[in-house]
Amino acid sequence: MKPVIYVANVAESDLAEPASNPHVEEVMSLASELQSGIVTVSAQVESELSELPSEERVEYLKSLGVSESGLGNLIRATYNLLGLRTYFTSGEKETKAWTILSGMTAPQAAGVIHSDFERGFIRAETVAYDDFVAAGSFSAAREKGLLRAEGKEYIVQEGDVMLFRFNV
Image (cartoon, rainbow, N blue to C red; front, side, top):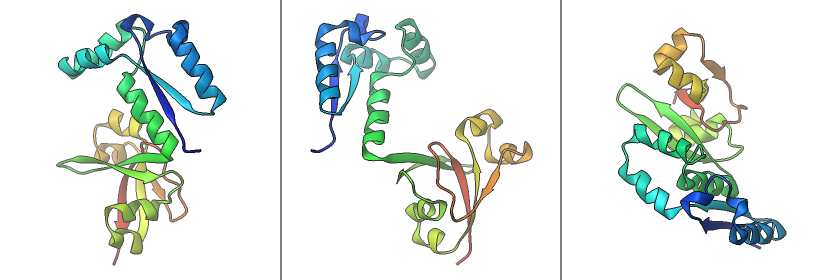
């Protein structure tokens, strides 16, 4: 059977405790029986979130008793279901997210950017996402000693921020 995620659209009042809704409880039971996932979303809340400035979204979600939007939960559940992970590269001009399969090594992840990166892989300078954000930049993370030098066997973790060293 193909993997499935059930998505239940709920009222704003059911977001914090979706299992209290008998319809959601029924879908949860079915999902459990079929070994599938379930995500609850309030389409109305998602619509309202799309109109708010980003700094107000977190406060709005907190006021509803949740920490992440339903859409964010759906994306995370979908990534997990498909065995996908995200890592980042960051330079002076931009930070970019890359999608890889769970379990990929650093050279394989580098190959997603360009095959030369994989072929000539030397090492990956790596910092955890939260440490990167706290430091403010890759160079600041380096100065604070937060970077790790990872080799060819390193399994890329969700949210790693990486700088690949290679020679072709």
